[in-house]
Image (tube, rainbow, N blue to C red; front, side, top):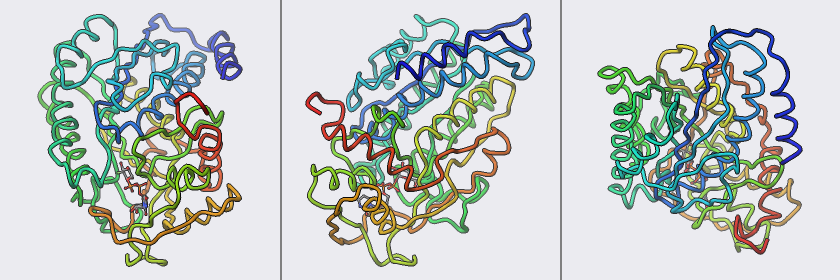
Length: 381
Ligand code: UFG
């Protein structure tokens, strides 16, 4: 990691091509999590990867002009309640505050203390489809109410740019594949419903108060940092690829396949798997876009290729060289049959270019983490 960061810092010291008189420092605030242990699984490891990518982009931006301003990303503040996250996953160069978004005073205190924040990246939501179907009020409380408190605090502190982790679950059963951002949003689960409500809250807050937003609708976030030291660590784990790899590393007996009677080629659900580093890149590009004057908008983030659950299991067997025991079960409530993105808009408008578009490579990065960290961030690996 040091080698990697060392390289970036060296790059950052190069003289810039165009020097302009205005050199704002962009203090980026990353809100990870609130609550749900489930949410952490997806988001906290994203944040750690994001920081590395953030520094990379810093290097790039500080060496060239962006719009009419020379951008300099050099400080990151992370706010997380650590209910399900791990302090070990927070980059040592980030300034960390422990707190909960639903507590107005806690978020106000951070924003009072950290003057000059230009943009906020909001990862703080519960994100489990299955859980949202049995505990919907938890999702309204954390996701919707938490966002309302955050927006009030941002308004009070004059912060006008927010990038938001949304989801493919906002669409529900799609009318067409791949899915476009303009397609109808009719969520089939409470998680997707709350994320859609958050998007609408951003919209109306912009209309009334001018806070600009970019909503990034992730498809299936997965993979781990290529260095193998940052990966998913959820308790309980509920996502497909980590569970398969826990079977491969011997910490779990089998993978349960939820539903074999969907209208797909092998009867199991189809998803679009997108690597966490590519997602992180998109957040940085979205910040850059907003700060350069881009209008509020919504973007899908996926690879545009769908894989069935059975195909993912077969690929994992190939990558790991391990046998993976499979048990077939009934459908999980709230699961749409197929979710595959069109990400053309993100590519065109944000200049996003996902690098990990091969499922085998994505699983290999996750396996590097799971095979060396069977206990996640806990000691004893
Ligand atoms: N699955 C199994 N067995 C498991 C776990 C999952 O068969 O043990 C299946 C699910 O039924 C689903 C697919 O594998 O068909 C993927 O399930 P995940 O739980 O890994 O992910 P989801 O598709 O439910 O949800 C994820 C994110 C959401 C996001 C969604 C968008 O958690 O935030 O992708 O596609 F909205």
